[in-house]
Image (tube, rainbow, N blue to C red; front, side, top):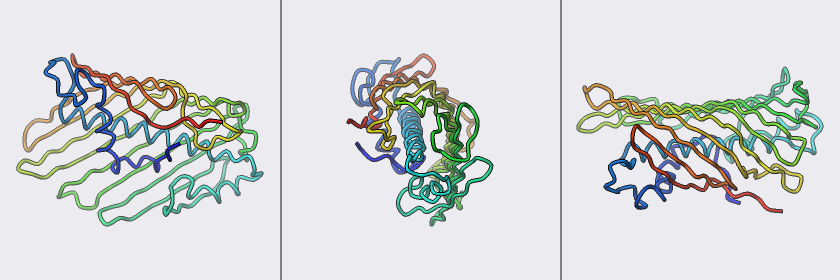
Length: 282
């Protein structure tokens, strides 16, 4: 199975996902058909990349949340001690605490251009009642916040803010169900002959995702089935011109880690397939 990415780290792989996102669109693989009803162009490519990245990173949050259900620990203090590294990846230490039946993990990284900030909260439940330990939990709530801000806004930059809430159910069985909502805002500024500002407001609704337990472990979890929808509002302003607003809607059906996607904007539409992860085998 390919390794999952760090939580919501979108900027590092947006271009890569943009390249694969248009495979299967319309009449050819580049989305350059003369069909007037086919979605194409730079705005669609960038929007698709951000949507794919948001979903991909949400699957990372899901996988890492399930990995926190360690069956060999009896105290959540032991889990907290192991969370840095599970959530933030190698070289990104964080701080963990457990209070009021919530496990909270935070991390802040100062970069040359700005700040990267994470805040994740987990709560374990049995029959709807919060527990002081993750042992035997049949439900889990994960709340996530990820923010990237640049210090210098006078030049070209991209800021991100993602947050979401996920409910995990049936954790005491062999197949977990995940529902929830995720939002992503991307604010970009490109300085050129005419400065261009673009803002993507992306709202993802997870109707239901199913993840199987393999060899009594959730580690490496990848959804075997599920449905998601994403609504996007893109606001673009070039120089002193009036802002232009474009609406998109994406519908995804996931099967064994791969998604069939339909994208619609006004009277135009497109379809494509994208591979997010590989389902582990016995």
